[in-house]
Image (cartoon, rainbow, N blue to C red):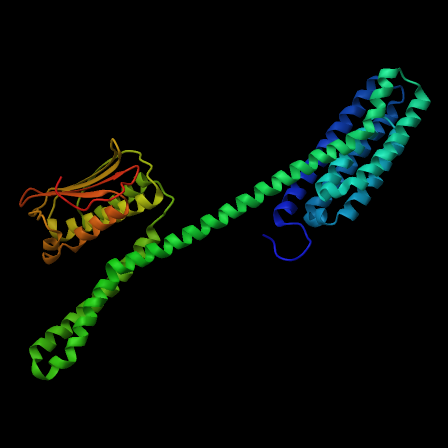
Length: 404
């Protein structure tokens, strides 16, 4: 909806400017083609050449004016008054030839573009002048009856062209306004998704660490006098937690800067693997196929990949890692396999938390957010495999981590 004011909507202004240029070019092409055909039919070829030159100069001038002052279509009285003077100039040079009727029809179309249905008085004026010119042509040349009927019908071409221009302008304006509305809605949705994503990242990393720091800090004052050793331990916990929170925030910001949401998942996985291998010194062999999941799914999968590789660097003591990304029968699968020390996979996730495997719980939550499931396969001394399967259509009740 538009607020107060009687001016045209932005969509209609853009549509009018674009179609006005199209009308001017089409009118020039039609008029010059009709005039050029007269070179073969009339003896006064100098007049035909003069019409061709005049139309070319007038059209170039109008197009130049629109390019320099795009808002001219918002001043219809000025535009149509000037264009009517140009129509009369073409009439004077062509002496009522077919070039004049083509040019006048284009004037009707231009009026329809800038005024819409309010151009009716302009169409009537052009039609009246054209009927007078047609009458003079018929009186002067006395053509056969079928040719006379054609000449009499020419004055109505301006009104018909004008109606067509009204329809085209209205349709284009609505299309532009709808496209703008969709773009604004998409931008708002993207901004909301980005805020939710940032909130989730902060909750999953920094906020949990700060919560632990806060609990330790609350217990510190009461322990200073009664249990100095405990107070010293709590102070160390606060200092370590603050350092960890700062590191997590710095890593989070760095990762978010490196994220390119519209980059395809295969390229993103390859880049993450290459950067991690260079930083950790552990070779990564990749088996990557082209897949195209939704952007939000691809983001969660890359975050799972980062966490899986981080776990390998922290705990696995691996000599090599294999990362596989491929389409599955129902969706997409991402696997991270290492040849490290491995561990026993418990049935209960709380045991992973107590064993300081917080990252696995976070990966399971991310898999669930993406509509998929996280699988773990590991045994002491046999390495580990972390796999996330995401179907193309998210299940109604996403499942949690479990043994395959």
